[in-house]
Image 1 (cartoon, protein in one colour):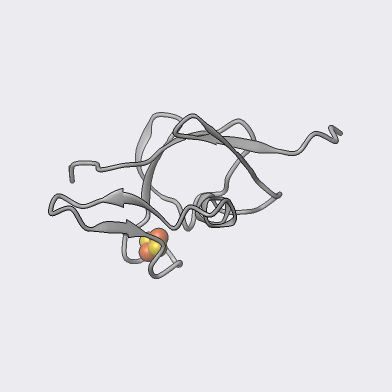
Image 2 (cartoon, rainbow, N blue to C red; image 1 turned 30 degrees about the horizontal axis):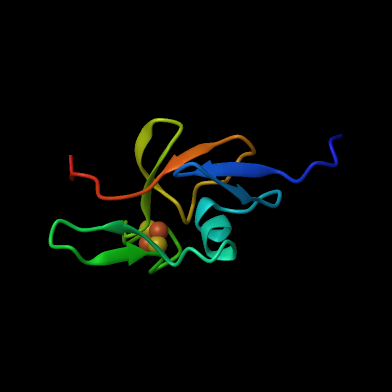
Amino acid sequence: MSREPAEIVVDGRRVAVRPGQSVAGALLAAGIRSWRTTRTGKQRGLFCGIGVCFDCLVTVNGRRSVRACVAEARPGDVVSTGSEPDD
Ligand code: FES
């Protein structure tokens, strides 16, 4: 087993992750409090934290509209944040 800290890449930035941690948990632990902007320019990040509100959407490994609060962060995941059209 590797002793290297596990990491994901968020918008080109390396972010440490713990086993079982959600993507949102990793973002918050890295000091990232909001990571998406609505069409009207409002910032969004973690709100409900239980997969209900869809405020925390990110793209993970090219898969769009992933709820960061319920998605497990797996080492090597590539996460993109930012505005995404609703489709
Ligand atoms: S914070 Fe509500 S769905 Fe993720």
